[in-house]
Image (cartoon, rainbow, N blue to C red; front, side, top):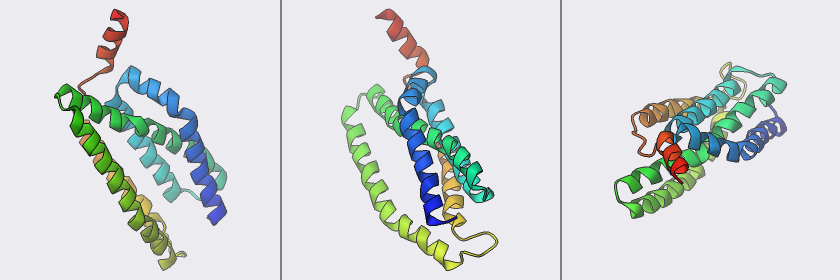
Length: 169
């Protein structure tokens, strides 16, 4: 893919994520943050897999809609799940500390991973399994591990509890 087409794919996922941000928040409120986070991780992994498996640009543009929906599902679900867990255990300050550490580590990791991805691409762009796919393969593996980790969490504030609170008011 050319740089222009790669950027267009990224934009499609980003625009879809922005469009679905509020509906996915409502989805998380209705069905629970844990299941929303798991679905979001799965859809994002699916989006990365499509970038590895397919080279048809029109198909990839369509499939990036699912990746964008996954981004939108992940955006507030992790933070909400962590906030509710700390709040249920009576520790409101731990969430803000963890949240700032997550943001810092995420920003620092981009400093290393973006150039690493570019380097892997430049190493051998004409290989049968192009080296630009290695970062996507790694990301899919991390998403699978994240899905397993999230599935072990207990959601302290379920959608059933929220429905009871709403009906009571």
